[in-house]
Image (cartoon, rainbow, N blue to C red):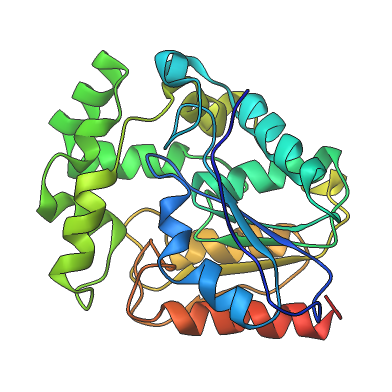
Length: 262
């Protein structure tokens, strides 16, 4: 499987542990490249972001609707094993869910969950969406097609960003979001939930206080399941890596990496 990988390599060798970034649903590697990849490279890390199969410029778009979470885990493994050393894996939203599943099977120096789909799955979110947007919820599930969730700029902002996010950022995202695997969403709801007891790598769990998908409570529950405390970034929506506060989020990750000598 050919997978798109965007890399920003450090000019120094001060940080031998690479970082591998995993995007969330309907996104691709591009979401990390605006701020995070160059920022971490400036701080001595070799930073890589993959586009999962069916996303961005990776192969597999024709079967996108039916890829499973285990397929995405295989993509992370493929890229991780191609790097010069085992990477810290950093996942956003669905990517955070994939990181949880990856770490059940494979060792890594560490993992970072950024606005991650929670350890208990997507059912509470599905219920909230049904209550708040019943026609949209029924449309998505009847058609098994996820893109309508982002069919307006207003909804894209409400789900992905805070009120502080510039219009230009929302506009760029609106132009690039794509469809997502319906089968993977079913895995995250019921069929392939995380098993925290199988994860032995240290984890950092981050969330935004204004997240339109996952609540601070969801983030805290996930953190407790992995024996840690959640870090919540104030006035920040779901796409922490693209929000005006992106550097605050990145600095939390840098501090956590430094504390572990990574």
